Each structure stands twice: as structure tokens, then as C-alpha cells.
Amino acid sequence: GAGVSQSPRYKVAKRGQDVALRCDPISGHVSLFWYQQALGQGPEFLTYFQNEAQLDKSGLPSDRFFAERPEGSVSTLKIQRTQQEDSAVYLCASSITGVSQPQHFGDGTRLSIL
Amino acid sequence: AQRVTQPEKLLSVFKGAPVELKCNYSYSGSPELFWYVQYSRQRLQLLLRHISRESIKGFTADLNKGETSFHLKKPFAQEEDSAMYYCALAGAGSYQLTFGKGTKLSVIP
Image (cartoon, rainbow over all chains, first blue to last red; front, side, top):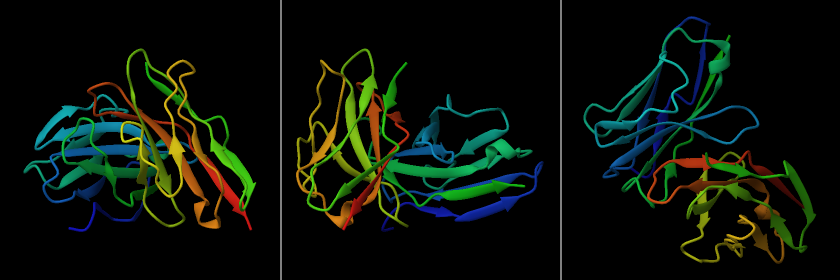
């Protein structure tokens, strides 16, 4: 595709509900990243995939957050039992390889927890 | 731990005036530094990286290891430069980007 595609663009959920956010990276990009961007802050790293392998999940804020990339392409970030503090923009980025390569970002999913 | 500091939340300059967006970092090693930009209603995109030593849209940035800074400069600001600018750091051989909080540049016509 032309760029990284994320869906939905906006998601509103009630506290306690589960949500799933999708990322479709640039075709052929090995590396995929998820970031969380709270209002007025810069993006913060959540997790990193190299193909289907999740090599780093050190940024996930709690065990309610889970990410997968089963076939090494599309990735899903799932948040269980959402809390108000989960409200943020969730950004996905991909790069040709992980190291020393520019990351290409999607438009993000704006998640609001009521 | 690595950290990126952008001391200015908002910077307003007149069209044609010089621009300097400040970025300081903390990292014990040789980092890679980047500037990302987000124009209104657009996605975050790479503006430049220090290893390329390029000038993009008239912007330049020099890595100063002594002062641990990577300030973004442009001699003459244009209205289309109005955007949110983020400085980011990756540790040597690392994939993980650490971002600053961003500076909103507003160019006054």
C-alpha cells in the first residue's frame, strides 16, 4: 500500500470494554512498532515486532495490553478491560528493518474511554 | 536511561525570521537523532536524521555531542513550516525511538 494504514481512526468505548486496534504496515516492511501518545506528549514506545516475532514488549503499560502479528504483516493491539487512562492516540509505524532505518507512521487511532 | 528534552512547548516567529527549535538529549553512548514533523491533519513524518547530514525544506540540524544537543534550524521561516516538531533518539544499534514532548511552531504571516 501507499503507507501505513490504521483502523479505526476513532474509537469510543466504555470503561471495562475490550478494544482491538488494527495496523496494516507498508508491504515488505519487516519491523512494526506500536506507540501510545497521550495528549500533549510525544509518542511513547509500546512494543516491537520483527516479522511475526514480538521482540520487545517492555513498553506495554500493563498485562491488559496485548499485541500480535501472526503472519508477519497486519498487527493488532488489544486492550482488555479498558480504563480511562488508556485514552490516547495509538500510533503504528513500520520500517524496512528495525535498526537505523526511518520509521513510517500511520494516522493513528484516537481511543476515548468513557 | 535515554531522554529527550524539548524545552519549548510553543514557538512563534514571523515569516522570514530565523527559527531554532531546541532539543537536548541524555544518553550514555553514540545516539542516532531524528526530527519528525506533523503538519495539521497529517501523519507524523521524518524530517531529517543526523547521519544523513541533509537539508530538508531548508532545515538543518547538527549533533553537538559536547552539549548533547540536536537543535533544528532554518534561516528564513515560511508559513508552511507551521507544525508540530518532535525530536527523537535511538540508541546505537537500537530500534526503539524515544521522543521529546514536541514543540509547536507557529509562523506569523
